[in-house]
Image 1: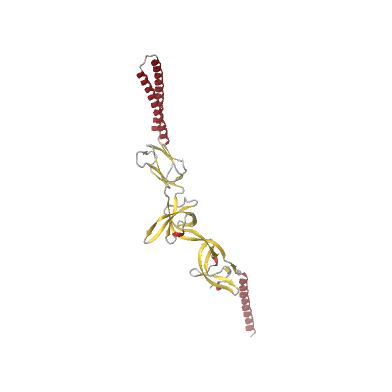
Image 2: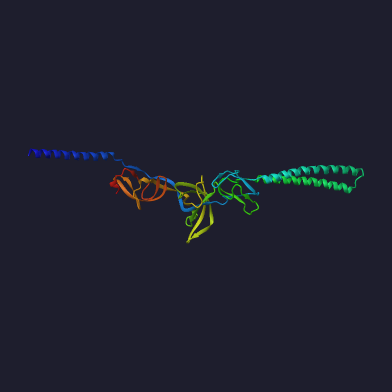
Length: 356
């Protein structure tokens, strides 16, 4: 009997110790629980937005075709597809030997014509002296005058031909008319280009700021869209990158697809747009106006679907309220209906059992 009583006392002690440990652990967890934190909604001005889909495309005049103005063999080609060039960069050089020979020929002709001018001037001076002395008829003196005039005209023509040949030589250096990226190359080193062809395209250059955004805005929203309005958009290739732009113009004619009327809104892209490619699709938000709104931290919202809800701190404890949300502004979200500006919205510290 004593042994049984002793065993019972031991078991009772173990049970009491276990219960004490459980209660102490619960008290410790309760003391470590985060206190309830609440904030009041912020009254801020936010943008009213028109949402649309868009496409990135090359703007008019952004693609320049560079041709060869002289015929000859391509002696040196300094670019390839994808090369970035600045305005004035030497894209290629055409063999100048033929033009150099023409320049040398014109210079030699100038020297010869200068001799002819001097001889004609000397003959004219002698003819005048002989005319005064009565040794030369008037007609011959006039012929000498015409010969001197013709010699001077011939010299001027040769000088003009030399200038033209020197200008032609400058065309043997093909330079970039704009800064941009080489999109295509139509020839290679050693090939012969012929400027007599209708389209002697040498290379094609795409301007650095070549792309623009075209947003298709529904007819129900187009009335609120104006030039110079700010635009935010994303493209599928960079979904987490918010890009900026401004409305440039609104095309006056509509595009009708399957009975849906849309208007093209042309948007100038701000900042660096070299990473954007033509035909990329975009999600566009046009900021059309400012309005007052109540915003709370997104972390205060509960529920993954609709309707969303949150908890408001009252004198009787947390109170659940269903809300209607609107525009998101960074870490804040607009609450259109469900709370007042004076409510204390619980952000954190709600026990899980109270949230259900």
